[in-house]
Image (cartoon, one colour):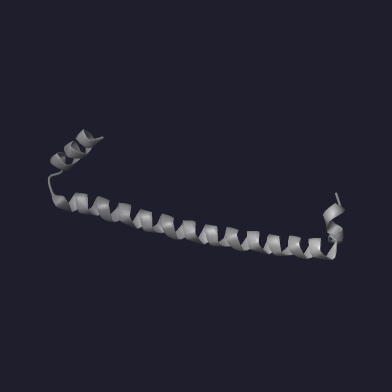
Length: 70
């Protein structure tokens, strides 16, 4: 892998292309992190809502009527 990177940087005629690749990669990483945070936040809220509903059902000793329908 190290030789491939050295070869890549040696073959580039100008630093502009390398900078463009780095900027594009940075943008992709930032976008991936933002999407991951959003997805994990939504998942966390859903799990907390489910836990709250389960706690309520267990404390009351009842489950909603729709639980047992097929």
